[in-house]
Every structure is written in structure tokens, then in C-alpha cells.
Amino acid sequence: MSRESAFALLGQRRFAPFFWTQFCGAANDNVFKFSFTLLVTYRSAGSTALDASIAANLIAAAFILPFLLFSATSGQLADKFDKATVMRSVKVLEVAIMLLGAWGFVGNRFAVLLACTFLMGVHSTLFGPAKYSYLPQHLAPAEIVGGNGMVEMGTFVAILLGTILGGVLLDQGESGPRYAAAACVALALVGSLASLGIPRSPASDPALAMDWNPVRVLWRNLRLAHERPVVFLSMMGISWLWFFGVLFLTQFPAFARDVLGGGPSLANLLLAVFTVGIATGALACDRLSHRIVEIGMVPLGSIGMTVFGIDLFFAVPAQPLGHLQSAGQFLAHAAHWRVLGDLFALSACAGFYSVPLYALIQTRCPVQQRARIIAANNILNAVFMIVANGYAVLVLRGLGASIVELFLLTALLNAAVAAYIYLRVPEFLLRFLAWILINAIYRVGTSGRERIPEQGAALLVANHVSYVDAILLSAVSPRPIRFVMHRSIFERPVLSWLFRQVKAIPIASAREDPLLLEQAFARVSEELRNGGLVCIFPEGGLTRDGNLARFRPGLRRILERDAVAVVPIALRGLWGSSFSLAGGTLLRRRLQRGFFPRLGVEIGDALAAQEASPERLEQIVAGLRGDWR
Image (tube, rainbow, N blue to C red; front, side):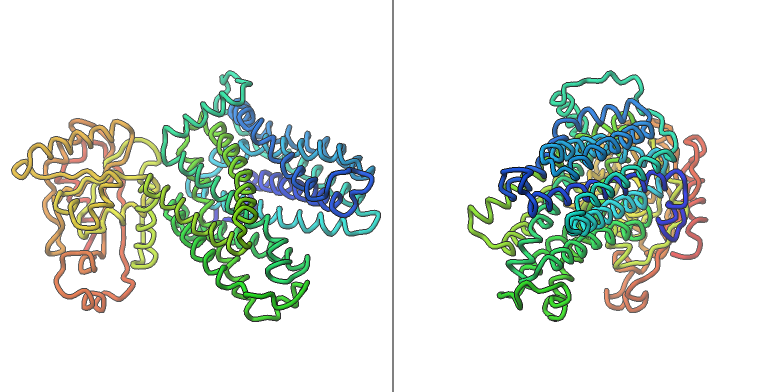
């Protein structure tokens, strides 16, 4: 992938056919659903005796219901069979559904169109697990975030274009339903043709025995995810995002009309701003995360969702500045730009929030179970969307709140949900602090990041310059690291809480605390035997003069017990920083180094355990560091 843009993936066969297949499917879902909704809203006579609002809710329920019924089965299919074959089969099914839907549009047959809505939900249910488990098979680790960003961007742009196209086509007089029918069939055919170019994606678990009991399979998949707290809470975080997004999108028509005094074009403008914001945030993730799965972006996104959600409450005028204004008339008022700015920023933060979570699930799940866990995530998403509608009804009708008060309460609730997730899995918070450190406080250049093993146990060995060395190394590593640090640093005020949350391992010399020393070696061994990354600072403490101290022999003891690969790392430029032991006031050091000082992280080639003596590693780290302290 080009280092300049994730768009380079669109020129490659491993991604482009897949992207356009999912793009056409997402667009078609929304052309069909919105055209059908407008048909029953404005032309319900002769098709159904149901009230238009009830019919619209029934359409939404018919589309979501298959996610509850068939997601468990679809996950098994995506793990058992070639994912390209699954996606092509689903696209053929889509063509058949749309041909039936065309007959329903032309004849204004409500029952037929409702059945097709349900079948399109089945189509999306079957496609989802194959879609998200396809990416890790064909993208390199450095491309996962960019690929997910492209998929999220494409999906939301397709939703926007599909919704607009559905409205435009249905508005073409008596011929509107025919035009909608033709567009749906055409999109299905284009998507099916695009799917023919998707490369083979071998089954993850071809020996899997299908279980057709969806409840039992769902429970089993949730238990699999729950065994990995980061994965499970990422699923909950994604489901919360759907709750948040559906709640806002559902209220836009009434928000535009009753609160902002706008007409249908304003509702479309709000939808467009929200969608473009999510697409922008999703694409920006690739660059802001330095092309690794940077879950530190998740807290950044959730903070923005709350901050801009609260500001939206204060940005909305107390009284509408007009009645049934067009989008152009609305934009003529300067006060309204703040409303649109908040919506754009809020949705961009939602993009920051979602992409790393999807990428984390894809990379932290066992390969053989990936699609089934993604299927369980889809079920949770559907449940949260249904709950979002109930929550909106409760707040608006039960509590008598206004729409802007609903938005405010949801923004505050988002803060509570985020706090719960980050306290349960502090890795999110640590990575957020690391992201802030290397993007807002320092300018960090990293060399050799690819030398940190993507899988399996390894011992990272680094020089120790500052109190934030562990946070800095967390920022450049694509995987979580367990740090071993001297007790005096582990017990520092404020930092102590963070180090405890991320399960850092305190250590002391045999003279200071022999029991703690033995416990530390035991915990290091356990982590390495579980296939984790462990980082030690073999100097035994922070440098007091900027020079490299002798590497202590405890390193040899670790490798005698667990003969794992050893990766030498040199931290450069931290001496004299705000967090080192260099003398001088904080302001003076800032003025000497600049307010955004440059740092370096040099990662050397891995050594076999038998080659990694303390003396040799000391020489290697000294060479990597050079004269830049």
C-alpha cells in the first residue's frame, strides 16, 4: 500500500473488487429501503391499510430481524467456506431479491416489498462476517487500519448516495417506482459482477461442523469473545456506536423540521454532513494512527463525541430562525454553521472511534473463529439499534424531553459508557496517553517497527531515560507490551495507578526485596510462555547523566528460563526532556529543547536467546542510540 494514501488499495485486485462489491450492496440496501419507505409514506393507498409511520417502523424491523436470526449461521459459513465464494453467492441472491422487488415496486405490492426488505436483511447478514474477516487475509498488518477506513468510508458514502438516490427516483411522478426498481436491479448486477474479481480467500476452519441452533451458536461465540476482554469490550464499543449513530440519524428529519425550522432538503444536508464526517474520520485514522492498529484513537473519538454532542445542545437556537427553510436559506444564518460544525466534528470522531475497534477485533481474534465472533458482533449491533429506538421513545415521550435534550443526554451517556470500557480495559487509556505523547508533546521518528514480531513471545530490551519510556514504547509497538520496571518508578504518584492498570511488573534487587525479585521473574516467564511481549530496562533504573549504564545479569536469567527472541531498542532524544532526571526547571528545559522536541526510537534486528548476552545487547543498544541522547 502506498505510504501516502489508503486509496492506493483501490488499484489492487486484492481490495478493489471487494470494495466495490460491498459499496454496491450498501448503496442498494438504502436505495431499496428508502424508496420503499417513501412509497408507503406518500403512495400507501392501494398497497396497505397500515398507518405510514407504523409501516416505516415495520420496514426497519424487517431489515434488522435477520441479523438477530441468522448472524450466528452466517459466521459459521464464512469460517467454513471460501469467503470469496460466500460473497459471490450472496450477490447472486441479491440479484434474485431485486428482481422480485422490481415486481413489487411496479405493482405497488406492499407484502412483496416487505418480504424483499427481510431478504435484503438476510443478504447483509450473510455478507457481513465474510466482509470483515476477508480483510485480515489479504491486507498486511500496516494496511489493516487503512483498509478498514476505506470500507467504513465507502459504506457510509454508499448509505448517503443510496438514500439520496432513492428519494430522487421516487420523486419522479408515476414512473418513480419503476425507476427505483431499475436502479435496484442495476446495482445488484454491478455488485455481482464486481464480486467475480474477488480473489480466493481459503476457509479459516473447513472442518467446522455446522450448528443450526442460532441461540446456542450465539452464546458460544460470545463466550469465545469474552475470553479476550479487549475483543469483547471492542464489540460492545462498536455496538454502542451503532446505538449512538442510529439515534442521531433517526431524529434528523424531526430535528430539521421542528427544531431548526427546515424542510426536507435540510434533513438531507444534516444526513450528508454526518455521513461525510464519519467517512472523513475513518480515512484520517490511517494517517493519525501511523498505520498500526492504534486503539488510542478510540478514547480520542469518544471524547470528541461527547464534547461536540454537548456543544450541539448549546449551538441550537432557542427558536427556529425560519419555517420550512431550504438548505440554502438555513446556511444563510451564521449561527447555523456552528450546528453543522458540531455535527461534522462529532461524526468525524465517531470515525476515529470505530475503525480501530473493527481492526482490533480482526487482529486479536483467533483466525479459525474470526468470522463467528464478527457475526456475534453483528447481533449485538442489531440489539443495540433496537434498544436505541426504545431509548429515544422513552426520553422523548416518557420523559417529555426535546430532541436537543435527547442529543445532550446521549452525549453524556457516551461519556459514561466510555469510562466503563476504559476502566475495564486500561490498554485503551494507555495507548491514548501514548498517542498524545508522540503527537502532541513530542515528534517521534521510528525506525525498524517491523522488527517487533507480529506474533509469538519476544523480549524487548531498551535503555531507560525517562518516566515515560514505557508509554513511548507502547505507542510504537503494534502489540501490547508487559513492562518490567524498578519499584521506585512503578510506585511514582499518578503513574503508579496507570502502571498497575496495564499490569506492569515491578522489580527490585535481591538486596532490596528478594521476594519481589522472584515474583517478577515468575511473572515474566508466565507472560513469555503465553506468547506475549515483555520489555525490560536492563540498566536497572533511569540514567542520571544521559549515558548508558551497564546491563545487569538478570537478563541472562530470563533467557535461561525462556529462550525467546530478543529485540534491542534504543530511545533517543529523551535526555533533557521534561520527564528525564536532567537538571533545570521545566520551563528552562522546554526552552532549550523546544516545545515539540524530536525523539527517535531505533529498533534493531532480533537476536536468538543464546546470542543475547547482556554485554552484546549493551553494545547493540549503544550503537543504535549513537551520540543522540
